[in-house]
Image (tube, rainbow over all chains, first blue to last red; front, side, top):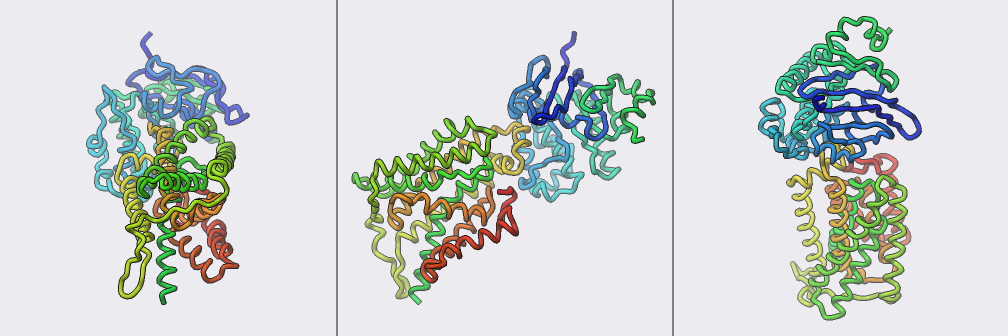
Amino acid sequence: MATEALSVSAIDTYYGDSHVLHGVGFALRPGRLLGLLGRNGAGKTTCMATIMGFLRPRRGAITLFGDEVAGLAPEAIAKRGICLVPQGRRVFRSLSVRENLDVARQARAQGTWTLERVFSLFPRLKERHIQLAGSLSGGEQQMLAIGRALMGNPRVLLMDEPSEGLAPQIVHEVGRTIAQLKAEGLSIVLVEQNIKLTLDLADDVVIVNTGAVVFSGTAAETRTNDRVIAQHLGVF
Amino acid sequence: MQFWIIQTLNSIAFGGLLFLLSSGFSLAFGLMRIPNLAHGGFFMLGAYLGATIVYYGGHFWIAVLGAGLGVGLVGIAFERLILRRLAGNVQGQVLVTLGVSFIIADLCLLIWTGDPWTVPAPAELRPPLRVAGFAFPTFRLVVLAIALVTAVALYLLMDRTRLGAMIRAGVDDMEMARGVGIPVSLLFTVVFALGAVLAGLGGTLGAPMLNAYPGLDTDMLPLALIVVILGGAGSLLGAFVGSFVVGFLYNFGIALFPDLAYFILFLPMVLVLVFRPQGLFGRVQT
């Protein structure tokens, strides 16, 4: 069996005493994009926080190219190559654009991301490199959050709702960037509420509901499965 | 006239000393989210160490450096051996810093007795500086100069280096800083040690004005707390401005309204806590 880029198996995560994730599992193959869908409060962000080490799973395993990472500190997980574009962007507001990128720099043998490459991907960030991140527009902050994750030379990139709160044309731009990163061979987990954006980009889709996986399949299967979409993602 | 000029100068010099005391305290508070209640003890320990080095014939400036180094080592040991084990337990950490402050106070009483130790200013700085018919205390001007140089150095460290940017990132969003691979536990040690070194240096630098005596720790800690609450935890600019504000309030309060000195000192702190709890320049809620 080929080694998966990221494999999450049967993880249980708690906030204090409240049991949030119930045996969640999925696998991301190298160079593919996995869309993680689900309604608000389904456990998508908790799942990202658990993979990143912000929360420690009580049970289950998380492996990065075969190496166990569950239970490691977030900084150790980042060093091994899991990089997060967090929900709400969470740029370091009192740091300049350039400093935001600089503090996240991780050298890696096979890594090719540098400040110059991030700036050529997002020319807007280069124009504003001395500006404080807190003074950027939402779209620019999203670009910075993506650029910051890339500076870590990710082996697996986690993106948590990168389209949230952005104007439609910016969402389109973010979508193009994600497609470009995927075309370069990056393995990506994309968490979204935007079903169309996800189905356009993803190879595989996993749907979670109330902390458990309720569907997994290819994007094409998901697209044609009206029942699944209506039951687990539909508003009505 | 002479009264106002001298009081103003004393306020500014005391403000400089407070900056040495509270800048590291504020950075550690902003980053680690806990007030180090042993910080006054660090200052007092610095004063006693310096006084001892001078007593055994060491030069004043050697004493200043020795006190900084000695207290810095105590700070590193405290952070690595005790605070580190309570990571994530903020309440436990605060209580431990309080406990260590009592231990430092008792050990100082045991070693240096209850009598105050005086430390003379270095001989070359004792004659007053005469400018335009006014006599200025030279030593206080030098303390102020040292504080200003320290402020510039800290500013460059925090604002112009990758290490400084990492510390500010940790103050902004600790979890995310860890998520991008910033080694926060190393930063904790660096910032905590830096605060201890500055408190130790400050203790000896302040000794010719304040002496070293039991209770120096509890006299200084509230001043550092007021500075940090006024300026905002984790803000270097806040610590700088706050130090001089408190320097003026404290000196003029004692000189003009001795009965109300503490009221004058704590009133601005209460106002800031009520109306702007993150402090004048801060971002972190204290």
